[in-house]
Image (cartoon, rainbow, N blue to C red; front, side, top):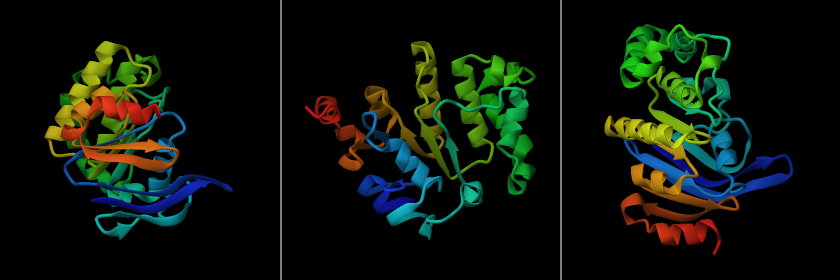
Length: 233
């Protein structure tokens, strides 16, 4: 579904990604892990058109994404749930959700997708008239995820969803990820909680210094070996 081949990207004269290649299969959850500075966020920014691609290609269903403006990514049925939630604090929960279906092509299905969001995240239904800025961190993460699903994307990219959450909320978050995976969603998950990320994934990529140093089916991953590579031991 998503094919990245020999990708080089960075910031001005500073290159971060070095001939990086990976594949995301349809209907699978692919997790990308790695230490701080490995290039994970840069990779997501390149996919979403936030930084230019210097070399290589990014394709979705065989169609090139290189050069597609970020604001047109919803036209190719792709949504990203950013690190840090980034909800609209002065808008209600329901207004935030409706922003996820703001593009004209998504408005017809907005009511049905809103109901699906409330079924998957019942706490959001309880707080639908509450300002998003008053939510807890876990509730704000649920809101960000539900907002990303409002356009019913073919590809969902989730960046560091468990960051800063209490353990009980992390458990709930990964239960939701498991349900999305069970529904056949194609998901790219960037996550530093290696054990939980591997546990929910179909395929695992480990990045170090802008390169992929491990690509393996999640069922075959040895956490000890993964951590040795992660910490460059």
